[in-house]
Picture 1 (cartoon, rainbow, N blue to C red):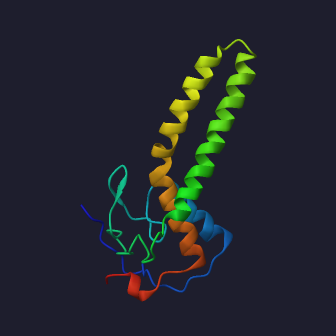
Picture 2: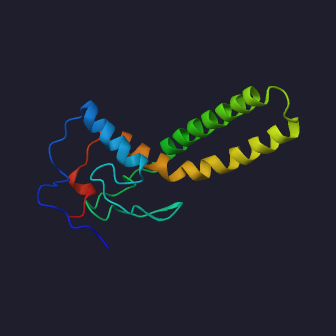
Picture 3: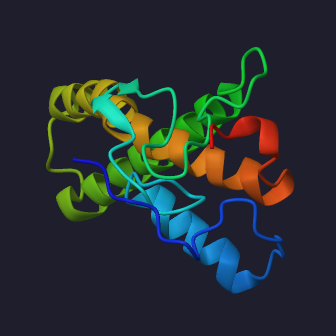
Length: 143
């Protein structure tokens, strides 16, 4: 069920942020994996995140009140951007032939569905960004 940690997978290894490391962390986050080690599963259900990574034991909520307020912001920006792109695309392809009620109904469906679908990804992206600025400390791991 859980992957065993390899000896060379030290979660407290010296951290040096390079573009490649940042890209790797964001790619892991986009795949709903731990940005620190790539472990999974991090979610018990679609919207319910586990307390710790099952591989490196990183505490996923890093101990601050309202920690994921940043992920709400990322979710809002991503959702609204996708909504605006869908609207522009619908207007461009429909070229005025689409009834207004269809655009309104589609907009409402997108405004509700997209934030729910993006929530796990935006939580992990926020964790990755936070790990880039504040590397893992020993007290955040259960070794």
